[in-house]
Image 1 (cartoon, rainbow, N blue to C red):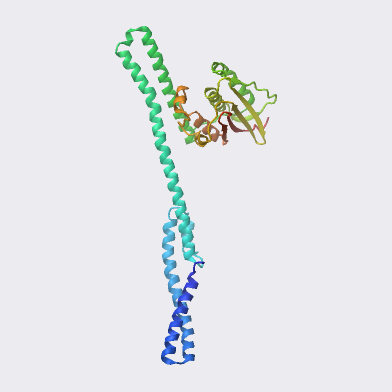
Image 2 (cartoon, rainbow, N blue to C red):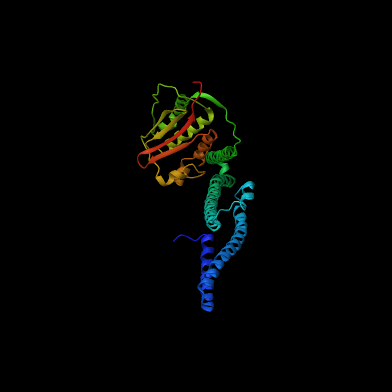
Length: 345
């Protein structure tokens, strides 16, 4: 059943009141004519008075509620016009506004909860990433102070391990500093025109030795066509290096990593693909979060700070470009990102 509007409600009440008064007059006066006159007079007067009183009262009350609801989410000009532009059915409008307000607040609460969960996870991960190298350094130094320093072979071994932990800590701090600058928009991009195919070839050549150590084949890039893009060359080199490095670290024995390039009108699409172990679908939405690791134990064994893909995403966002990932367990993973095509090439 449709809800009654103010007009219908006042007419219904007035009609009921007029019927009661008309019947009472008929009972005491026994005159149909007088009763009909009183009935219609009561109906008209009651309708007018009830509508006027209820309408004025409700509109004044609803204005106050509107102002409270819109106090924090509307512009000043819209706030000022709320009270003067109520429709014919302010109760219905009020209900709709309250429902919208509740829905907005529910979404805000959900977002805040997600942010709080993310903050807790981030602080926990950051604490763990900092403690691991610091505890290692502390252990090595105490061992040396306790007498291992007198043994040249042992002392060199522990100093080498300390140096690695210091390097890991330094890399972590450098990555944190870089991602903070990228998020604040403080990173300065030195954009230029360059051939992305040639850049990927250079990265493949520089990482060929590391790939061979893990029996991963970096497929020869056979593209005979140059694809010129307009971007910060060294930042893009950092992106490709990170993606290729990940494909080597988490690839399978005798696996392969290859690159592909596609002309997308205004952009060039670059794909880095491997036929490694793959990533389950549940991990894909969070893959670019800071410190997010699929297999935490294996990831730390392979080194790295856990910030590589987050930095990749932020570098591309600074270029106003995007990156996507698709993967299947046992089939492999493809990272695809776009770059602005150079205008004069």
